[in-house]
Amino acid sequence: MISVQSWADAQRLWDFQQMHHEPRPCSVGIGLGSHDLGVADVTVGLYQRGMFPLIVFTGATSRTTRDRMPRGEAEHYRERALELGVPTSAILVEPRARNTGENIKFSRALLEERGIDVSSILLVSKPYEERRAYATARKLWSAVEIVSASAPLTLAEYVDSMKDPRLVLDMLVGAQQRLLIYPDQGFMVRQKVPESVEAAYERLCVEGFTSRLAPTT
Image 1: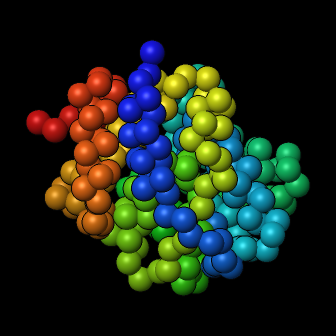
Image 2 (image 1 turned 45 degrees about the horizontal axis):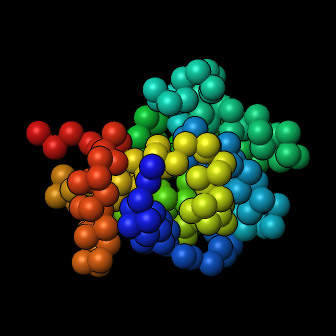
């Protein structure tokens, strides 16, 4: 049973981990690979609204996607976009990235190889990965403007979609840990984390929501 306090702490992390950007037209949309095909759906929706003329889907497979996306996350995203009416000519696939840093680096390299001029990117991720993706892109591609986007879901709606409340809280804690430790490791820019968010994160760790924490030694 997840306590009322833990739910309140999870809500605090959920709210902080989103950037709350208003989508606006950009040079390209980049959909970050994951277990969640909703990222592809959001990317397609933004494309169909005219927010960008070109989509890059990026991602190989991970332990959580190997079974459900055997052809690779980016390829499954591409297939989903084609089903939703996006023309093949509007999609590029980057099939090698296995983490957020590689998503950004390899997507940038692919666009440069194609000679595509990029001044801004609309970066589409899972809701609780917005801030991590933004901070990573700011570190690795500082010359471009970055706008963050994700499915407009509440925490409760996301938990319902995942069917595993404890896993969702574990993922929120894991994402928050990376925002705290990765700047020192050179993986992302540092962002101010409110004391209330750090306190919520620490309480959730004490409560055992730790399965998605990155090793620190």
